Image (cartoon, rainbow, N blue to C red; front, side, top):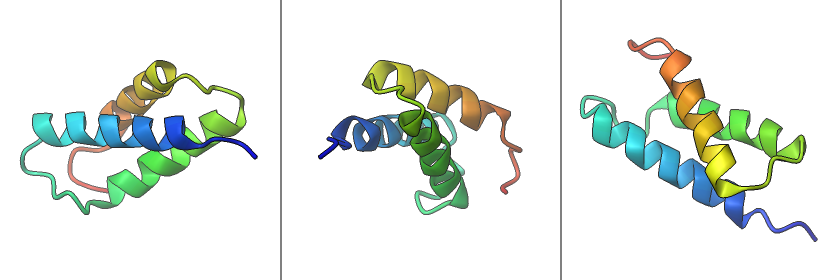
Length: 69
């Protein structure tokens, strides 16, 4: 059984940082789902360190359009 705790932790960290920086974004915004999917792909590609996943997640969100998805 694979421990997916680092993946969930990375998603939570990245989303919290994103919300702190973008106060106009709702916590239930669709970008969280996109982020989770993106990091899941990285996870499946054997990126398993929380810090590395967090970096990928922040870079990904910074590339998304500011006005939603």
